[in-house]
Image 1 (cartoon, one colour):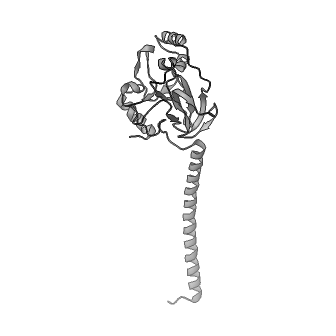
Image 2 (image 1 turned 90 degrees about the vertical axis):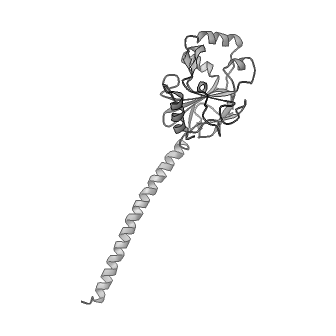
Image 3 (image 1 turned 30 degrees about the horizontal axis):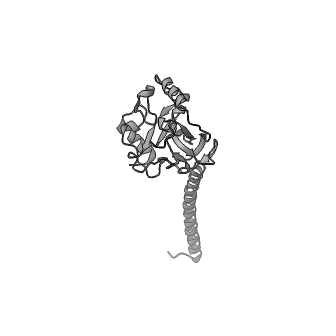
Length: 237
């Protein structure tokens, strides 16, 4: 049976409508996907670049067990709460004055711009006072000059023993991942009390729940497990 010319027009019209409908549906799916990507990008922009990085560019995690969270600190009858980056155990040089960066985007909740080193007498008294354990206030003094940053995921990163801070860093300052925040130093140590710049190190702690009151990264783990957990967080080998 031969189709009349009008049927060809109807058939072509129907095919065109089908193609347009399918294309529109595909466009809707594509638009929906793009909209989701834009929302994700906007969230990342508001929070700063995602993920965490180590606070010394190019550094690796310390290998010396004494430089890991949980290492014994007999002088205060306690343990270390963080990582110690120092010359020879960081894969990069760590001289006094090395730049320190924010491990992730967040808001500064402590920036000790006006830090003053303890006198030798006051430092000796502090060591005597913490012999059976240190309070949060005493731990604060032992960390020397500090910066604390609260991140969108609830974690708080602590940077201690700093020699100085970036000039405009204040409580409430919003920083992005990798932003310069201060310098490696030795504040809060006997060497700093003596006015020396040797023994440079960076103390780096990661807390959930609250500094000295919550849980720290690596708490209760053996050194190998600590390094595995930290490697996942900081995306390093």
